[in-house]
Length: 294
Image (cartoon, rainbow, N blue to C red; front, side, top):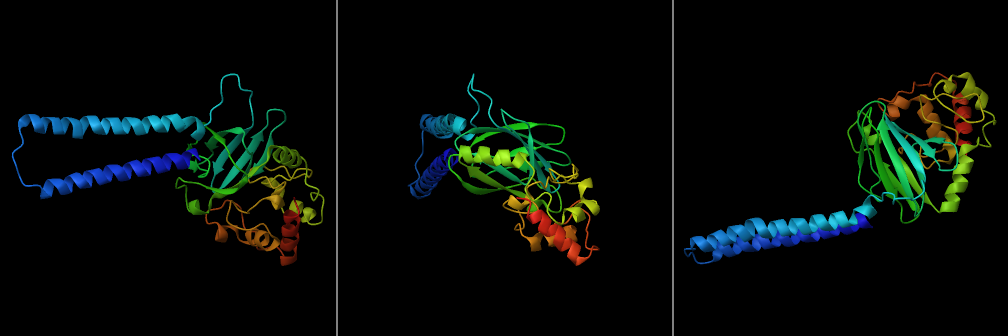
């Protein structure tokens, strides 16, 4: 809401200033020419070129700074530590780790869930090239720079599902690098986070043995199994996410099987190797297994 208010105030002020400038220009071109005294010309330059623009810019800047606590809701002195979410940009996906104040870290990927009405601190970095993190409905963007950690605080005002893009060109599949943002009621969020920390009920389902046997644990983690890889996204609850492959596909068996078979065709430049050489039945079984990790 604060971002929207700032936008409309700036837009209206800009329109008024534009109208005043154009009106003055029209008046100057149509008014009968007459000689202005040096004193009058000096006053016009002083007020029209210096004092009035400085006052207008000062007022707009002051209003923006007044809104800043809502746009960047930093913590007040003495406020207890809340949820911190660590997000690392990689070509072309998002590594996400939740740091609750009262529990161990919880890993996820390509989706962020937030409790409504609570301040959340994000720590943002990158492992390869510069990315940029942006949730348009919540606040401005922040760059993710290799070797540096930037901090951003946001507070969601209402529940819902939103979309966040990478806003810094980062390679071939830059346009295919997004994430879902799900804002939940605080109690529902805490229940979800507790479930996320545990293995999925489907971790031991059929198809898991094929996932293990074909080398997937070298890169991916599925809690409750021997898959503990950390190169690629954590797949412990991939079936419960809003999207697949960082915001570009639905989470269903067909889409998962397609990405397993030819990831580089779907997301050019993706680091995951293609497994299209596997029998179709094995690919379908692995896809069904992953879709069942709720």
